[in-house]
Length: 227
Image (cartoon, rainbow, N blue to C red):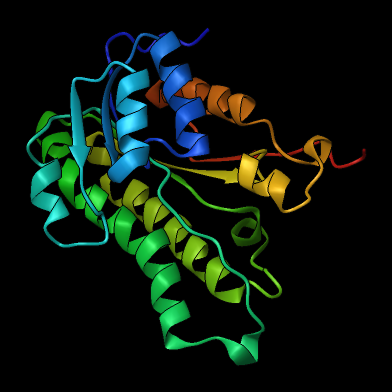
């Protein structure tokens, strides 16, 4: 089992299906947690998991940056995001803004919140959750989602190359398929073709324990697609 007893991890999207699995894994690994989320989902997460701080904030708003700067963390695990599909010719500016605000702007604000402390201590890790479509650079009927997740990947990998000499690393997690969540089951996806969220969370915890000389920058996790 991963040991994160010396780490303070900020987990965004607290209360979401993936974030809940990650929070359980972080708790099992002994990490201190700062839970960031919004509304009822955050409240449920705060009731379930111990946290040094609970921050109710909308990460698409500029004001969220100052809220996050009140706390000091070693790791950011960013799970905030949204998915949508539309025919290319029917996509609207509102669709564009929804995808890029949820998937890219929220990450940008989270990074701006945690980065000053990481740079000061010369130690930090920023992990963002991308998508299989972004890894393949193709998402038919989900072009805006794919583009926004590709932007997330490019941003984190660029941060890694810019800041690794200053002690801050970046990593992108690619779930290479749908995650097994109640919403996806309601949509008719079969459990055996989806990724186990707890297994995905274990991959995150493992990645967080890698030393600088054996670190990861990209990690792809696959479902059992042959069934």
